Length: 388
Ligand code: GN1
Ligand code: MG
Image (tube, rainbow, N blue to C red):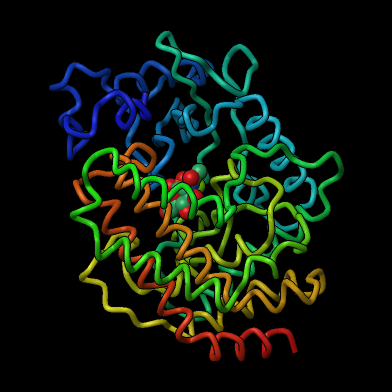
């Protein structure tokens, strides 16, 4: 029951480490996973689930079942309440990508949903927890924090290829799994409301971060007015193209599979390119906080632009091309708003493993946004070169 970590414990009581959960009488997430895996085991003898990945929302485990390796996920149903819509999207997207796949080892290039013994794609446990499973892709790991330009170009091309293939997804449109997910003015409004209501009394200790966040938003709005984005085409967007959401071959580092498909839904491609830039040009962990020395890696951006545009350029309209150099700043500023809002509201959305982690995440993202805006002329040159 992963979301319980965030939702049932009041901010004041909230543990800094999940390891303390057992002491508080909450259900042990690992024990629940041990029980849940049996629903997907299909006769195999399940091993002990091991926590996997860096996601802030669901809880993910690797587990072996006889001769089969699974990725087991406990879903955050507070954040994704419409599980039918979520699952329908997932099945449509993975089927479409599998049909479009022409390369060798297709089972390593597209996620395969493993059904529960009752045939369903979801399993509901006795406490109401909802689980699903994927076939674990062998010899693969997250692309992580590489700074090598050719690896970045290849990673960006993989995300671009994902977007291009899904631009051919037959009607009807995918469901919207989180409403107004990347709606910047809405995020700004929610943030300002949290500052004003200050439900956990944290605003006084975060005045610098609040001012920096507002300043980043003002700078962004000056360079990329929301009105310019109003007519961008609605496309199938992943919305979370960070490098951690791309699996690469553990040895060759060849990109294999785009994962974390729950926000693959109608949106704009600024979200995809922006998240990619946010995750790959910072040169620091997402939660580095004030220790982060801002230094935008323009060579990394150049590699991302050439890789992503290789797949998508023929489909882009002028308004998208013009906005792309600012997409990273927009997504960094939006994540800054979201992390700081969550800090002010008591860490109820993004799972955090230490106190002030969301504040540090916010500080990093805001600095990154400002740093990206300062280099916009260079970033424009890179995009123009890649589009030539
Ligand atoms: C969340 O699931 P995960 O941890 O990869 C979030 C993204 C944020 C990201 C920041 C559904 O993604 O929007 O950009 O954290 N996903 C959701 O790392 O809110
Ligand atoms: Mg995600």
